Structures are given as structure tokens and as C-alpha cells.
Length: 261
Image (tube, rainbow, N blue to C red; front, side, top):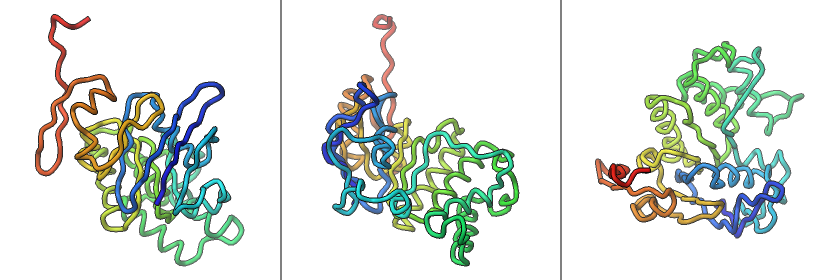
């Protein structure tokens, strides 16, 4: 169980997280949603220790994460930030090998099990025939799947994804989120993903955390948290929700012409 308890954090004098307490249930996909600048990415950075806490604590299996070294934490939690870069010369295969550093170090090199894992994750993301290509020669959708593969190759039980489908077209958004959802359903992974699109949240997520101004407004199963009143409270927009094939479709209401500015 990964959880935050009364977490507060700031960039200098600017508070970005205020009293955030959330439990991320094992084996489920939790989406973090909210307006721009509400603290979604900051929450993931705080979990990883990249953003120091001013108060509160973050626990993994009831033990403060702050007690774990960087390498120990890398064996437990994989993190994919919004923007990822690698040298122009680095191939996809070399990128994937880097993900195993938490297990073998740079001197020892990957084991046979590691190499089997690397081949497996490339097959999972549909890039097994691209291992020899430079990462920067891949298409946008392929690169995003490559970063997902790197996270999988880290072989952790918990995966944090910051806007994993940002800037991708609809086809790749669904392909990647279907892959992520499969990680929870078939492989028992716990995935926490920052998502902007509420319809993607209601389609793929089991749980949702809705944030506003650095606070957690609500958290729990999607059917209980993504409601029209809650969306209006968090996003300042009226919506209608319609059930369709076992999920909710969120449709914003247009402002009448006479009420527009």
C-alpha cells in the first residue's frame, strides 16, 4: 500500500501541496486529475523524493519512504515524468538496459533473467523489432511506448506515470492506456497516472483523485468521485455524465450565448 498522510510541500515560498492524504490501492489504476497547476505532478515528485516535504509523510507498506535510499526505492517504484530525453546515439535496446541498473549496477551488467525481461517488455509494447534503432528515430507514439517499456523493465510493483498520453493522438492514447490497464489486470501492478482527460479517466481508471489548488478534493472509486457536482467544484464547469458500456461519458455543457463574456 502506497499512501500519503497530510503531505505539504512548496517550491520556495509557493505552496503546491496542502494536507494531501491519499491511499493508492494495490493492483488498481488510479488517475490523478485536476486543473493545470493544481499539484498533480508535484504529488508524484513528492512521492519520489524529488520535492521535499514541509510536513506530513509518505508511506510504502506502512514504512516512510524517506528511510529508503534511491536505489532501494527504484526497486519498488518506477517513475515516468512528463518529459523524457536521451542522447541521440542511444538505441532502444540500450535505453531498456538502463532500466535494470537498480538490480545489477553498471559494472556487473544484466543477467540472463534481465535480458529475458528486456525482450519481454519490448514485445509487450509492440517494439521488439525496433531494439536496434535510435530512440530519437522512433515516431512520437513509438517513443512513448519505449518509455513505458523502460518503466516495465525496471520491474517494480508500483508505477507512477505523469501524463503518459500527453501530446498523442487518440489512437495512441487508447493503445498506451490499454497497455497500462493490462498491467494492473494481468500483472497485478499498482499504477498511478496523471490524466487530463476525464473521459480517459472514466474509461480506464479504477480509482480517481481529484485535486484543486494543491489539495485533494476527493478520492476513491471512479463511480463515486467523478460526478457532475464534483467536476463543477474542481474544474468550474458544468457537465453531464452518461453511462455507456459500463463506463461514464462526460459531456461539458455549453454556456448560453447571452451569458458568455
